[in-house]
Image 1: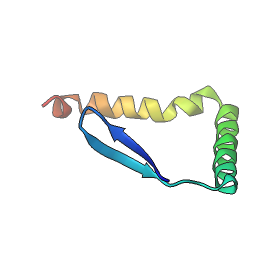
Image 2: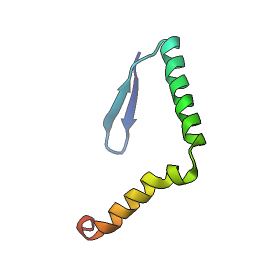
Image 3: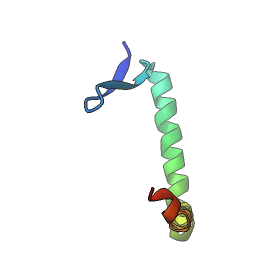
Image 4: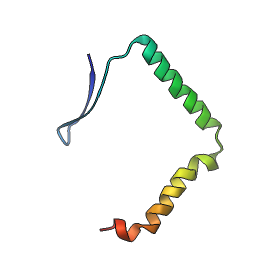
Length: 67
C-alpha cells in the first residue's frame, strides 16, 4: 500500500510514497543520518552560506519580486 500526501487546502494529492521493505527503509534512514552527521560537523558559517546568498539575491531583486 502506498502512502499519499494530500493537501487539504488545495484538495490535491501532493505526492505518493511507495511502501518500502525493511532493507530499503534502513538504507534511507542510514543515508539521512550520515548526511545529518556531515551537516552537523560543518562550521555554522558554511551552513549559513546558502541562506545568506538567497537573502542577497532577494534583496537585489526586491523591486522585481514585489510585483
